Length: 203
Image (cartoon, rainbow, N blue to C red; front, side, top):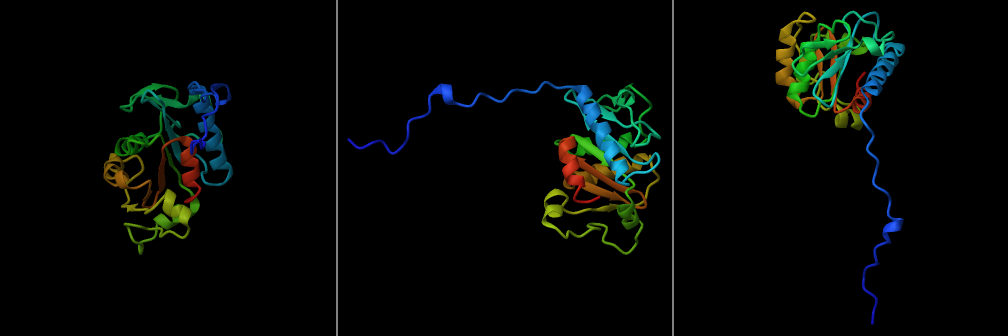
């Protein structure tokens, strides 16, 4: 009798064990955020007290960098913690840009982290007047296409203006990143790790 056209399954003893679930650690998220912020500062993508970062936690609350804080000198224990509605729970006073971060999370259900910077080159680009507001940075590399896509430019609004959140709510649904005129970029990611990869294509 001919052998069957398929092989016998390996014995259970040789099967790979199921992947272990890594327990959630808020402290690890805090440390990762601080390390990411420091790397941005060291690369000259943030200076002084400019820029802010947030990361969503599993329960819907999120951590955000405090107001007027230097991204190169953050303390994981004093990061601002807010509930899903943006109410301050603990830590230092949060960035005035919290409404902008909330808008990104609400517009994009898969969003788990947001960074807003005043990075020199993109901020310079945001000050130009003769660019396409629907796609102000045409793609050059395939990675930019995959990770960013189109980069819309929103009209100027004063930093901290609630109108920024309203404008983002409409635009962020279809875009991973947005450029604020005369201000700087806002980029989202599904996780902090994903955000690091995505921002590398634009900053």
